[in-house]
Image 1 (cartoon, rainbow, N blue to C red):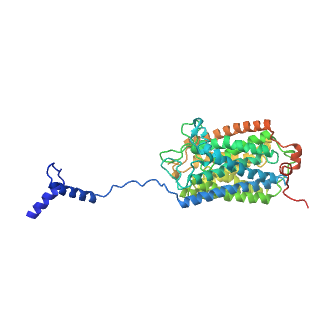
Image 2: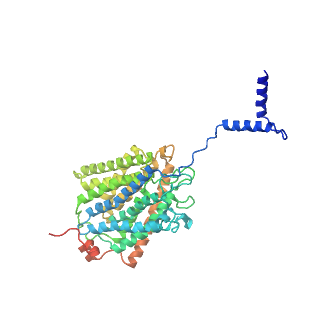
Image 3: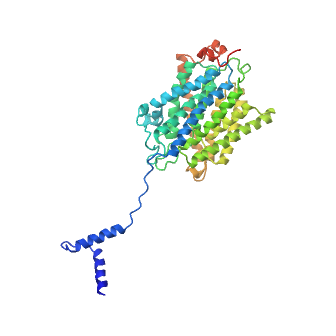
Length: 474
């Protein structure tokens, strides 16, 4: 009993406040407090945001950047095979010049205009903020949204986005193939990239929430896209370039002899090879836009394949029904239409959505290529507007209805509200790209002229602009 009483008293004193002046009790209380603290489990702290690079994500996005870069030479062969033999080198040269000019502009001011802090009330990013990649590190995780770092560095993100900036003006080449002066073309793509591509990309992907034309910024709260959805560039790349292509072909005018005496494609195998390279590169184009080796990247990869295959198959079926025979040119045109259509939706839709978008993109593109263009008699030489512009518009609008709740878009799936946001982005891009493209081409035409001379057109741009020929004459 005595031992139990003493133990009880000691336990009681460990929970009693220490009275000033009771020196003998202080060591006992301190010992008991320390024991209690040691026995208490440490509170769980939330894990810190990932601040280190993920080698898998880094590898996937860097590889995807290489895939997207390969698309520009693929585009060169695709377009080059579809023009006459006396203009094939001019097409290849124009595509490769895009790779040179846009790369230099991107690392000086272009990336800053795309992703720098807002200037002109959010019209674009500050061109000097990352001048010559100032502050763009290779060792720290990039945070496009505060407190939500990715597993890639900002320099990885920068170079991936560079490849998009390169191919977008390259798409426009097909609209004025065989008739635009090389110097005028080079000046045009430089100005267009800075004054059209960079602002539109800023609005759609990382624009400010208070800018009147903000179309699809990211919420700092949960990193879920707000506004228009454009997973990999349906609006920024394809609608933007497609509208510019339509304006360009209207301003420059048709080729000599159009539509009755134009030169047929000189090398369809080149075009098929180019289409194959584009299809391959598009997996990086769409899959890499998840910015990591994630489930969403897998989803984008799968939907890209499904939409492209569906579109190419349907185009061939349409040709069989209408003309009795499918063509290689029709097949690859359909594939490209499907790839364009799925681009804004790739990471937001399931396989059912990919099937619908692939089929719809082919139908709308076929109508514009086979019926609308001949009826209106505009010479969009390689159907940039009919395929990239119209399939891009269809894909962007279809995303509003077909986007699923799995990726934080709309917990109930697509909706009319999301469709209206998509429509806003499409209309804004059409108006802005069309107006500014017209102004740029008009200024260049007044300054140095846009179109090559009649003699140059007869001779071919390979000789007149580059003093070369693609094929020797035996």
